[in-house]
Every structure is written in C-alpha cells, then in structure tokens.
Amino acid sequence: MNNLYLICAVITMALITYFIRLLPLTFFRKKITNPYIKSFLNFVPYAVLGAMTIPDAFFATGSIISAGFGIATALFLSLKGKGLLSVSLISCLVVLILNSILFQILP
Image (cartoon, rainbow, N blue to C red; front, side):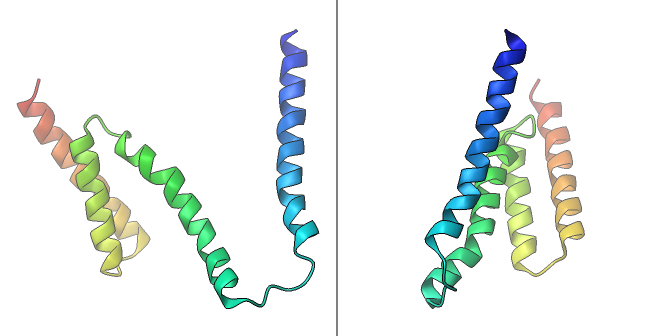
C-alpha cells in the first residue's frame, strides 16, 4: 500500500510540474513586448527566492534575535555592494557571536 501511495504522489507531482511549465507556453505564443510585464517577469525569480529564504533564515538559529541581526547585517552589506562571500561570512560571524553572547547570559 505504501508503494502505491508513493507512486501516485510522484506521478501527481510530475503532472503538476509539467502543467505549470506548459501553461505559459500555451498562453504566450508571441514574444512579450510590454515593458511593464517584462520588468515584472524579470523580478519574479528574486521575489520567489526571497519568499522561500527569508522565513527560514529567522528560524535557522537558536534565537530569533541573532537571526534578525544576521539578516540585517546581510541586507546592510549587500546594499553597500559587498560580494556574496563577504556578506555571508560576516553575517554568519555576527550570528555566531550573538548566539554565544545570548546563550552565555540566558541559560
């Protein structure tokens, strides 16, 4: 019974993924020339990535306080134009330091 359930789940997910990719091809046959729609579609990957990443970032550490400071640090450094490696390393260091301070003070 478990194998049948797993096979049905995989087939359902495959069909849903296929139809999600197929729908834009059927509706948009011509090249999109509207600048508003083109700019909207250019930002969709960033919005989806942010929507998937930001909520998990708040709960990735032992404290929401240190996670908030880490996210704020990453946002500040990225707005200053720093590279991906330096932003991630410095943000992780901020979270590490704050977690060590918070868990030393709070039992």
